[in-house]
Length: 342
Image (cartoon, rainbow, N blue to C red):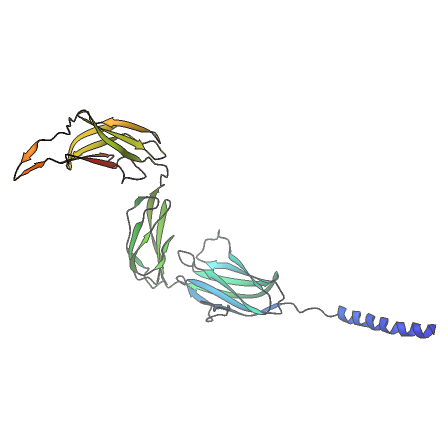
């Protein structure tokens, strides 16, 4: 019985050894790349829209797509876009762009080389695709320039106004001829041959217009000077208006969060200016009584006999900083008036 037991126990052990030996010789297939295609665009699932190896200096982009098979979760595909020879300076880095995509199963990996703002530089290029760090596929392409085609002509490019305070809008206007693509940066981007656009730059900005065709590129630059907005400002208000003897007196208060600058108050009688008063600076929150000392005023009025009897009604109005020379947070509350004679 002991031998029988021994022989029975040896059978499953031998089977396990054989199975383990068999599994050790099996390995998962490595992911691979195929069907590498260069194109002008990609579909939503990263398949090529066309198949070509020649592009032009005014092409908006160069795309490539490849089929990935045998991919497992988090398989990384890397694209290196490389410049080989042509119009680019020798000091330039041959590696133009490196991009990555992740596949979790068999898929199409797609990559895009966007055109520089001034258009592509003529020459020969190559794209190398690596899968999990191993070179899987390569393809060459050319950027061509049509030397027989005249470059675009920028007829006009302007901005109004060219100096603003942050938050204010400006209007760009342009007109270009003989261009296949026009791009204005930093805004509004790709535009038609003639038009205008309103932008609101937050800081000093240089706008550049690029006009491209297969013959090359022309550009024009203009500057917009932007003064930072002052958030801390005074706010002058006339809070009270009364008579003291024959002198008209008023109270002015700075309700803002910054000291005011020197300014003038104007006195109007029935809409006509009759006097002025100098107002010294007020600190934030400060209030002070002022008076039109040079103007003699009486609230008593003579009766007027003209097609009946009535009372002469007078409206006295005081406005501070009426010319807006002192920057305030609110210029709508600078006046106060009082009616006499009713």
